[in-house]
Image 1 (cartoon, rainbow, N blue to C red):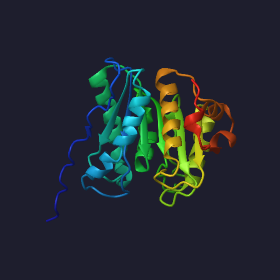
Image 2: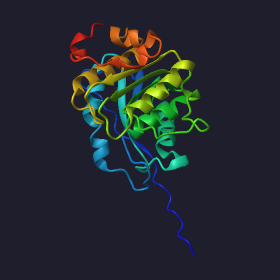
Image 3: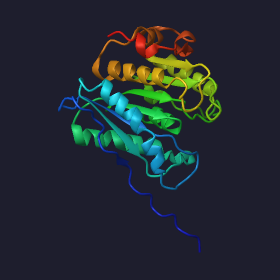
Image 4: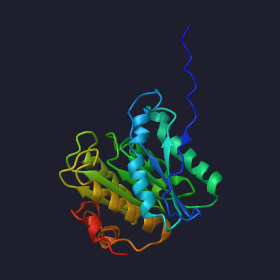
Length: 253
């Protein structure tokens, strides 16, 4: 007699990440989606959650005057698991939970690796206004079964990928961005030259780019010129934008 699969534990939002000086009113929420594995029903490692906390704090500091709150999502399991797409389902649940906790506030899904794919997939939720996918895990798909992009209509979309990423293919994120851009002009992609999957080599520039995108997408701040130019540029210019060293120091709002 075959064994029955045990039910997965429930997804959870981690504690709200806010900083001293933040306003009491929540006007926008970032949900951070950690990386994971292609196939696994094991519970996520606590390290995957902890690894997102410094980034969460950096975004919270940048948005503290705007009423930004950041949560890291704790998935039910660490795997994508083929058509089950568990992290994407969990991301959609998280957007529901944000509405339950804070009311009708805009949500930006920010994901890394597998979390980047989950953010892109869950973008169709009504509360989601923007998506940032960093080094997204995008397995090769056929022309007959492409990665869906319809759910990204009407959202601001930013993809960031290191050119030396050996875990997820930057060319696949470029091809996806090409398809998204045809249906949604508010799409851009930055390439972090010589950086790998973790985007550690140019971490300060990546964090500054993310904070600028979140501020402009959730709170209508003016984007820094590189982001504004990338969103306005046609492909391939707006999809192969280099992330210049010193980007964070160059921001002017």
